[in-house]
Length: 497
Image 1 (cartoon, rainbow, N blue to C red):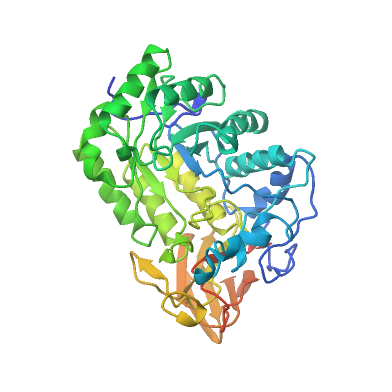
Image 2 (cartoon, rainbow, N blue to C red):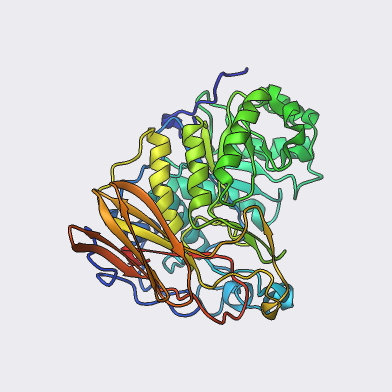
């Protein structure tokens, strides 16, 4: 059955104290690798509640299941909170992913595979189980409703993750849901029989994500890798088995997207995570409507840099993320698909991490609430989130290794301050030896300045009184030892976190 619009039911979780200074209750300065060992312990939910108390946010975040429009975060299983050990010095991140010579030097030409790792949760006897619950609790804390799991294989350890997440969601936050995103880049030879068997088993769990009418939501990644006939057969077979599907194709190459419209409930498309992301998503929304799709899903990405290919995009701080969110809000998107929760190999992660810290996470909380309620949330605390790279990124600098390529918007060197203001104020950014000031009205205000080598600090003043200030824990290095296009972050409301 076709619908005029894909609507998700909230009931079933379906789509449709100001810190006067960053030094108050602040974390200590980060070590050079950006990873600070936490001494906190406890249950995953208690850990996340302590990690992100109400006064860490400028607004009151949404919670899962409170809107007819939901936010799904694409969940890439390989990058768990810890890999091969819990300690920050001896797990696979430390020994391989973050080192230039890690993975047997496979990515040495580009400075190593990753530039950050996820922030760890508490130590636990069942560490993997605890880690999954921390991730669910973190996502739920900012109003994300669903993890859309990238299904890479139908058997083996990665295939076990969706089922483990179903249990994690049910035990951590019963309002949270798990969806399946069959990855057709990895499962090129999968048969309809195999997918039907997997989905029928998955659908038995109460935490499986369903549309308002009870259909199981399935969102294949790179849908175009299989012809429409493949997916029509899957839908027919699932309906015959008593589990009809709400089908949402995710396209990388949308050239053939029109051929899938007559049996789809909505469509999503991957676009470059640069500062033009908002414009690109608006265009896709209009294109999807012309092609006959009853609804479209906005795809939002914080940033994107891939050391495995030496490829980077220019996100301009938070602009890629916020521009795409606004496209979804203003364009009437029936859902938001965060791409990704934790794909560190492409640096698209929204999850709290050692370099970005809580910066993208906290800004996403604002936009998720706006998207789900239809109105910008009321700002309850003055503060700001800061972004800047830890170097002046020079992609062609051969002294640091093999040159990188830029995709999309040209590279820029900026420092960004996203200020949350309860009333008008004066904003200040100091980068290197230069200071920049700007007046701002109440509300959310993005202020940028040219980046310079040296330290970075920011402040907010009102009526001649400094009401928030913070020095970034990151320095813009004059002589970096490798290319690093990643934007790092910090927050005055969290101290350095």
